[in-house]
Length: 385
Image (cartoon, rainbow, N blue to C red; front, side):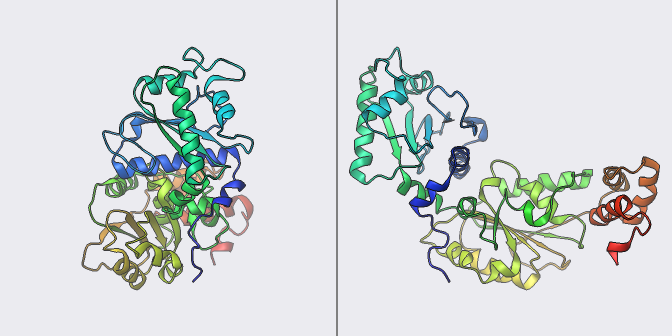
């Protein structure tokens, strides 16, 4: 096992472009908000680094008195600096707060920062391309405080984050580590998951699939005090993996997702890290091709990890075993949804309906038939043999 493989090094943050860095930190805000129970409606986030922001890139409007690593009690505003040229010294911060060559007074203070301080909020400046020791971070913090005091704010609250602190925070979430290292090969973040499963087709859902998605999201979003194991079972080709992808697309779930195959998870360094109570690592694991024995092994190692772990294991096995695991069966699609899949391959509606009856509710079969009718009309079943 390679020690520290899911531990971010500060220097890795130098490889991020502006939009990547901003997106990564915004996901960190979403994750901590979820853990603290802060609803998405109390977050105001822009992931476009070029948006005019008035001095603030992201807001937690109300933390409801809860505090975390990057969220303080009350209102929080985040300025995310992703450029290599930004230096949090007096001149750099003065320019950031008031603009180039302008007086350092309340009349020239960036409007979003002014509103944040008017609301007695906490200002957090996040510096992706600079590392600080404690003395340097405290110095940057004191410069911020002094500049705000010069605008008649008597007790401004300031947080300064540099590379080392960011690396430590990101290492708590394997999904965000995978964002930095998409070429891991064994595991995938939510955003890179479709590259191995080819989710390029439009998704057509019936009422039963929509109800199942709602049920699974409710389970994953629940305020359980224990670890959670959901087992999604169904026949091959019925659309389990695609449905799991749809279930976890919510911004409250997506940033925590780690996808991989059962055999890979079972003997992995990641599993060892997740079960270590001293690490306090959080994740939503989507474990595909996970047979009954593999699921039992993984669950036995993680079931005492507490609410920081959520598991969705996917299997063709139809049997159930007793215990805390929650089972959900994947329903087949109706002919109408299968017809829509086939129409997506440029079939006429009447022709699609005739072929739909042969698919028996399996979307994978529909996609193969639709593709073959486009590419091999002389032998529709050629790739199915």
